[in-house]
Length: 461
Image 1 (cartoon, helix red, strand yellow):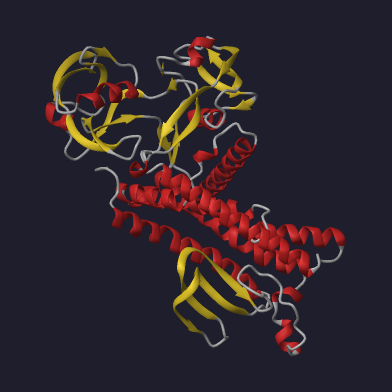
Image 2: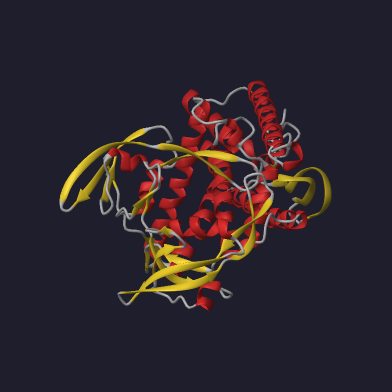
């Protein structure tokens, strides 16, 4: 990565990210509506004034609108894009009335509304499953290789060589399970069960709170036990690797960088990054023998915590962290579904923590932050960008399922009330609820946008 993405890169990446995801979301609504015989009056990417469009033979107006932060399908019988029911359909013919959204059975209306978020959910599942099928499943043995200097796990009694088997009674099969069960919970104390030389032992371990920067001025509080599982073994090189040019080979185990002993690949990174432009002696074990190589540290630019760029050191080597296991189509699909639900569960946890005051609302990001992330991932290559598309797709699914009037989840809440009451809420109540929900969503958009602006360097972020 050569630094913060440029403005044009961010705009292009943001369009390539949001445009297709909004289109897919709205197509979910549209296609299920068509399946149930509902006529669509308008299909819009964006809100506000129409920029371009055409009308198909079914009478649907397909258009691109001025404000590109979403979209909508306006079905027959809707008063407006928020799907408020029209005041009256007395002037409609029986055939026209049969094609309106609001005369359809409750279960059909619910499926039409649910189709949009579900389509975004399935996009995330498909992307994650496809990558898993092609690349295999990464497995990282949860055996502790080393500790960070202030590791709460070491202070609680864990040792190098311990293999973590459970956290708070939940089974741990992979080091990624440890991260999943601790990262969202800074400040909490968990019971960590380990296998130590065949004996099972359990320790109460406080999860340390650590702030992590996104490189664009925004920080998030995450949980950290201070553990590493990687071995400082060279597993590959970049095309222009200074380390390979200096004589290092794949399979070399790095044991010392300069005057510092290293036991994990994170130690290697920590020793190299501050030494941009310097030459460091690397001591490696090769075939049981120690060898020393003088490695020039390349200087590259990377974003700091405030969105600026600074020089950092790099030697162009990849560490060996876990191994990949090939999986079949069904297993890959299962992993895609499981990971998608895990991401959505993390969102629920984060939202609950913000409501309870356990996490700052300043961690929320809006369109500017998404555009910055989009540009950064775009610069890293198509794989990183497509992974980011999957993450934003599941975010869109989650946000739209929130029970806020005006969003898909709000409409589903109305249908639950209709199912319980055996009759729909009256039109005036729905109208006021939807208007209130739209105002809330707009206020939230303003808040997260101000959050984004405050994190920019120009505003002191």
